[in-house]
Length: 325
Image 1: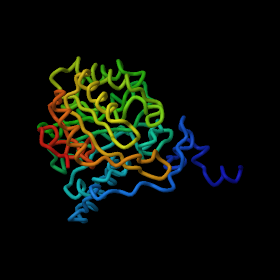
Image 2: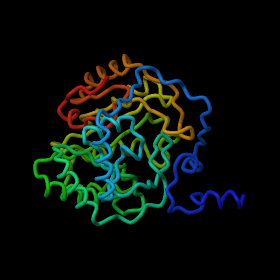
Image 3: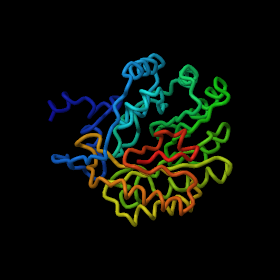
Image 4: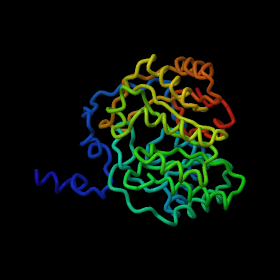
């Protein structure tokens, strides 16, 4: 056992980012290593970039400015397409999350101190990329009194100072136990779209989102909308984790009852054999049916398809353009 710890310092050193097996080692409900994953159907298609030079250049710009993207950290299947078009979803406050969600490939560990230069670096990069719409997300920062809401505000202010006409969508963590403090901070400079993903059905939360709470996430969305009724609220759910169709329909109904305007519905893809397995690949026809249901429930913007992600073509989603399959 001593040799094992010596060979795996991330087990004993919380400052080291844990991925894969190391991250999943201490989740409440043990995830069995996948030995025979489901074969991917032909509708799971990942677009390859047409211009690899653009992808390389964007990655170099990100590294020069010490910026992180959730596209890279979460192994998003749309990364080649988005990067080749010069777009990315920026992830602030580091690359180590305080949670151990079993669907997510972002590393776990003790976060580093906040970088006071990050808002300025982020604003400068966005201005150089000439973006008109930007998505900002973050790791969970349960170590911070406000959950990182103040740092979101600093980024919003820096970006708007540099790009006055830009639209900002913030995909925030749940701020569990810090909602009032976080919302007070965000009121100083709220985003144009407030996004918080519900991710899965209530029954699967302990297995898929340990440390999170279904009802709390819904309440965060509702409380933000109550404070800022003119700002669009948004959430997303993944399919293929073992949920049943009636449960998905209930989630959509719950989101509408909590005044959420926009919803994304996509296929869960297993980041590694140590993460929660894909239980089912949902066919495109089912995504279309769920999109129709979501519109009937009153969502103003719906994106539903196998490769849809919360921030995939987010600028088009905000305009109500169909980005599903």
